[in-house]
Length: 158
Image (cartoon, rainbow, N blue to C red; front, side):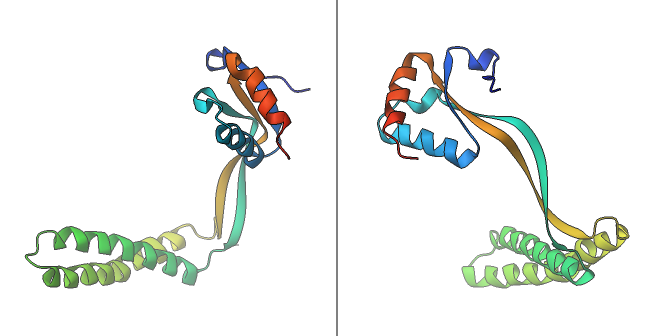
């Protein structure tokens, strides 16, 4: 049984469709927008939210060192760029940026990469990505424009 969402933000809005993926709901709103529909009051509401974590790979000491080195390089380059702002010429600033990147790799690779991984003592030996997913995505439009939205969606090929 599909129950339309309720609450203060939902007042004066009408459900024009429920979709199993966000991409489908987004395609509907894009179709409406492409045909001149006033989409400024349109909502895409996810219902039945779940946290999902997808495991990508095993975390090893070597991989931890690589992640630490990459993060350290970025941090070092940013520090180098900040210091380069105060240099008199671009040629004088370039060594500062390179020096910052190298020092960041050298020091932060050890600290943030290997040491932080070793401190976990095998409690989380994997790399993952998290996402918030919904069972369905409802598209709601302002009630005054609902008839126009339904008309435009009749001509839409799925």
